[in-house]
Length: 114
Image 1 (cartoon, rainbow, N blue to C red):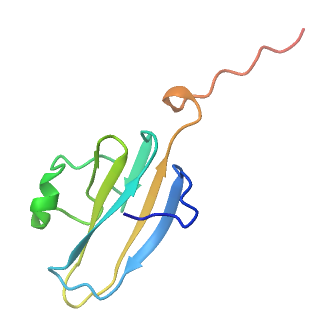
Image 2 (cartoon, rainbow, N blue to C red):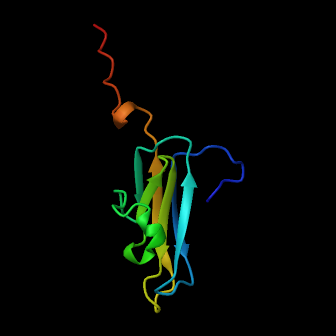
Image 3 (cartoon, one colour):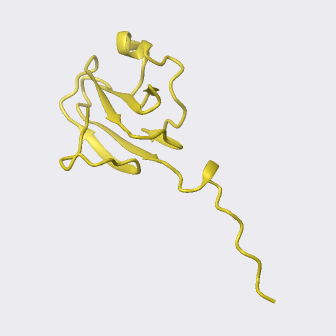
């Protein structure tokens, strides 16, 4: 799991990362544990959860960098895989957030005073 030093709850996260030294058959699973369900997740350009779900844990050869799924609705798992033996670095972006407003839709502004 990736944890923050202060161990406080963080839901809105974004970062860019580069994993180095990967061969074509190398991979790593990363996990983030949240205290609430997320409204948006995008990892390496992938916004939809992998249809493979937990299958990618047992069969990483079926997955691509950025494939992700949420277990127990608050633990996000994703994979980073080597591209090929000539490109040892794998870069990706990570973003999650929980909207402030229900369904991520802000309320209409109040009517103007007359």
